[in-house]
Image 1 (tube, helix red, strand yellow):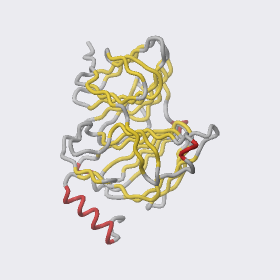
Image 2 (cartoon, one colour):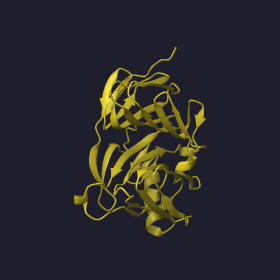
Image 3 (cartoon, one colour):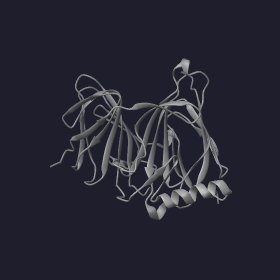
Image 4 (cartoon, rainbow, N blue to C red):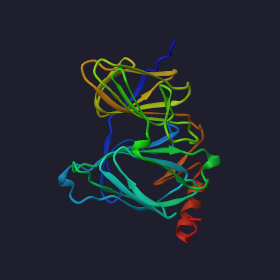
Length: 280
């Protein structure tokens, strides 16, 4: 018998300005309280309002101690970094970057044929033993992300396993589940999530019933304890990102683009940035 997780928290995203003046809807920001462990940040970006003026982005900036996950729905993002990598993340593509001991990177948005730019950025924590690991990327093109379509469900699995389909992003410390789920009207979706794992849903289109709670977009939900997530639709369809992972249960010290375990480690990071030894 499934032990269905109830909804323990509903968060309405807040508008924030980041980078060189990018307007984002933010549901989670890095905090010492670490209540979404192992997840640190969730941003929903859309550059679709002409009054925002010329496109701005995220010029070269450092990261340490975290993984950043960029998922594009529309438009594209060009990226380059201090390791010499560069490329384009287009519609349906995912970039899972493990910053480890340190990387400088730049992300600059480009409009698609529709004129829109639309996507998400998730930050996933690294455990203390991997904070200073070698940086790496998992670049996943849209064509390699498996899609499950059946009984009113359309699910793209980026990481983890749903209905026997495993996503292409692997070897992530948090054992995450990250999927784009679309349910047609009058559809039920049940997904096992191990007990003790943090489970979230970011509802960005339509509305559905999560456990027994009707929720309409745009909201982030946190689920309570249990071993399964259940979502049903009635008259309307719904689309959401399903996010789950194993918490590390370690103290964190977040500071801008860095998340370490102690303030001493943050101070060391700032010293290395100042004296030019941040990039090995």
